[in-house]
Picture 1 (spheres, rainbow, N blue to C red):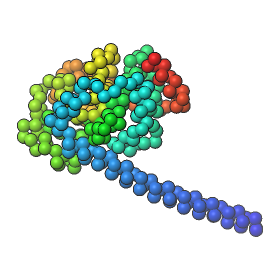
Picture 2: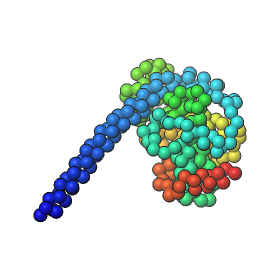
Picture 3: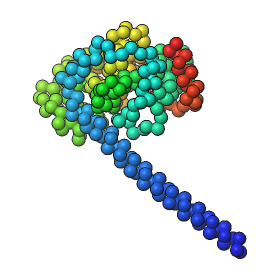
Picture 4: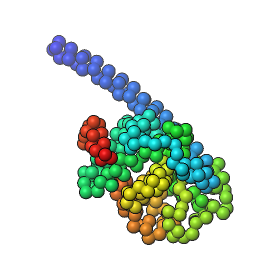
Length: 273
């Protein structure tokens, strides 16, 4: 009986510690979740306030020459580990691991398409702009067209565009804005960020990646299009033909990883050699 009592006392003691620990962890999670949400929201608030048609044109002129640096692919990916994406609530893994994981996931699904694997590896390299002085609201996050009405499927649409002058411009705040129906996305100005920058770098250097891969690079963060079906009135036949490839890339971004960091690093280093 005495042994049973001691056992119960010990169990109660450990239970109390466990309960207190879980309560502490829950409080930390709630506090961190709130902080993460605020950080993400504020990033989009700044983006949706300042990303206008004129701003995007200015950024194209500023970055179009590709004169900021000369680096290898692996050097660029390694540099990204200095960056914490303020639009992403998931900060558990370094950016390089995400790049390697994506490339490996695509390799398992599409072993015959090395260009697809390469796109998975390099798709976020454009975020390096944030290390060269560009504010994160002009680097990270979901993308959308400027120069026409901002659709409701844009993240935080209802609360973050209040101070954007284009949202009050009658000539821009229409379904097509400055564009013509079915003009094609290649003729549309997208909000400025890492996707658009890397796409422009690829075009500037005449990179031999197939058109499907270039679409993945430019539009993988264009959620209102590939996930919500908006802006279809701006698409031409080529865009609709490429859309399944962009969706396939988004699927690949969420594949589980099965290798260690060092193994993924070696595999991806061989990919770009």
